[in-house]
Image (cartoon, rainbow, N blue to C red; front, side, top):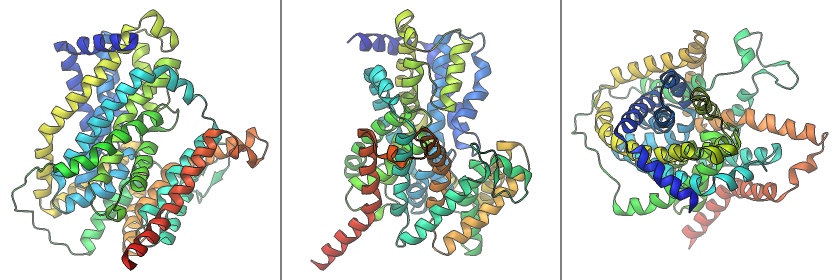
Length: 497
């Protein structure tokens, strides 16, 4: 009751006109930044950080948090409309969101992303208020082995995105894991698979690889398939989910919000793991999962609710322990520093109005996101009416700008083009690009936690099978791996009957 009283006061303070103006500004910039490939949530927040100097913390902190929330949602817009995830955490949304758009349901997919993000984000904020101290303590129990198994749980989705050929999915995932170890070994300081190319010493940047495989690969696929380039002349309408669809996606959005809050509280995990984990959990929990990956509305709701829930979850270790669990949380911590405020347990003792004002503003920011999102859906859906020749050229232009902005070097554009060709060839020969992206994103985290755990145990693998958290994660991982096989057997049995 004590925490909720402060939380309600924080909501009331956030309804002050000036606070709303700054939050609306932060939300708009966050959506724009998230929608531009190459500008992640942390980059968007960094660009907004100079506005915090000389600004009252009651204004600056809500503004920065609104940028964070807006960027996580904004990344779904290009993911759905042009198969280009604005941020790495929106890669899972491409699987069903873009397919919905190809079926003429781009408006419905955007609304589903917005609605699910609102539900997941709201639940995450409420969980933050109720569990900020207990969840922060639980997050401290995660060591290298727990992180390793959690990452493997995310990788267990490979079978679910592999279509009719699990073997090709495993090959594609292995290729992604191979890409993840390109560069300098952080433990042994030796270069791996750089082939003498100096720029590869620091590894492959995420944005050029993702945008190349998804966006440029799709452009090449359309060009070589000689698809008609006429614009869509039918009237563009924004349709909303039916009552039946609302009933299907609302529980997934709520469940994704819980996953996002928990994963966000784990240092180093982030929205990318949360979105893939929510997607895999949705495939295991839902019925008739054979439609996932072909434009299933549930495949949009699950990852979008989860990655939009991460910002509030990330505040748990930041506020309670003073430990930023991600780049975005570190930037938010920098905003606290600019205001002369130290994060940690004493913050709730000395000045509880500050953290609860931030929590209240994040709750209000969900409503602002919903309102602004509804206003921009129809203008964005009109992108589908653009002639495909011009649209593909625009996609290539933004892809190159986004890739170049990651390292400010033309080498990133070469990487983009190379992986565009790779993505095109993978599609042509039936290898799922999503499996490669999944392996690439999670590969580095899996390797670093594996080796860190082995260093602690002096080479003993027994450490991976100790503790209740490890056992639970192992069971979930095995279930995820076997799920496609079990589902296939059940499907065959039903057909036989």
